[in-house]
Image (cartoon, rainbow, N blue to C red; front, side):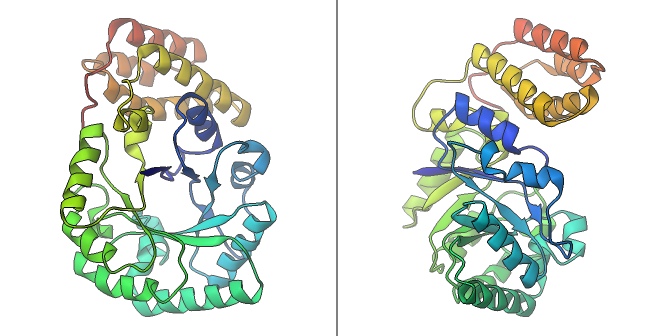
Length: 325
């Protein structure tokens, strides 16, 4: 099985990607948080640094594009080709209200005709310009009803999509309701493109359960994309493949290297601490009975207070036998 690291806004930028790869190799593709392609014809400084090849050496990175305009999408594909990328992913899965309100991300799925027009225009222009990156898509099942997926897959099947990552929820679910494996299968079995599974794999046992469920019904995905589960437990793929549990020493070295990477990228101590606290919101699930220590990490106002709080947590808490949901 191939494993992909999902894009997570504000989390999976190049400092985390490089740190994760250094400590826990085994990821076949890392997807960037979405890059906004718009009428400005340029990416922000942060977005530009995130896809700078110099910041992504030795790992397979796939830029993800968010836009509602085919001309802007084609421009972004060309910009990624100029940077040497061989694949570009189109975001049709983001459920954020602000994104959806603009008809982007999973908001596109409420208007199948508009989606079809977008893809037809984009692929026609990409072919005309002889752009070489493969185009993959990350999608949800629909907006309100999983049954919408059957019309959406009919549209996708008209175009040369290299891979289709399906997150088996509709937009209104956000990340709250359980993933819908039956609706995933209904969509996946009709897909002409190779299908990637994404959704609610937080533990090795989750992976085994879901893969067994799909295999029993005659389907094996091309790959599995992991997001929050990998942020919670950076060694998750190793565990899925039968390797050892993550250790406290690995966590200690990982968060230290990640902090140093953020300090090189992000100006200001306060901003670096915000990023580390964001990561600890996930990593804290590795440690049972760690709530009061995590509270101290969140309260830290200086680098020294943060480092002290992390040391106290690592000194007083042990790794769980299995990450809690």
